Length: 236
Image (cartoon, rainbow, N blue to C red; front, side, top):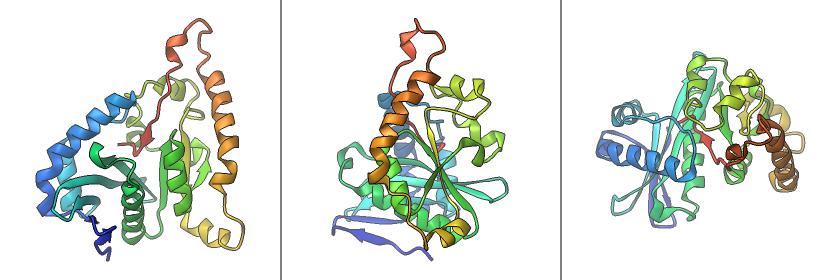
């Protein structure tokens, strides 16, 4: 059972339920506005879909102690429950950079491990901040081929500005980095040194710059593709 958690005597983070259905429309609107502001291609979700996740007990919601909405995340399963993704992470603009996203992700991770203890937990991101959160939870960077082959999974990337990179490389490369938590591998890795995000982040930033130059070089004269996406799959 995933119990509610009070953070800094200000917020409560818990598994969403029927009492939070009223927030679905606001959450979807904020997801869309956030994606527009960052220039990302996160797939849209309807209020009905978000409500279904709440009623299924597959969503995490953060509110103030006065019951004002702060943040949200839900979980999706792929390949018949072999993979789980923590998707649709969104924080109200007034509460960003407060550290609440880390707590929401941690609670979604706990929910995923509770509901699907043998499943691999996955994520796709270009954000170093999200990579740091995932790394702290035990995720490791992986090739895209290690993520689900389910067509529905990759459908979440279709509206991304860099979807053409994914398709023309047959899903082998993209600007996003795949991350995965494997419960079986994690048991073995506990005996070894974990991947140190802070130690490797500078190397990762350098690799990302090189990768962007290579993958965006469809036409050397086309500079319009050199935008900086910050897309977290969540494949929301």
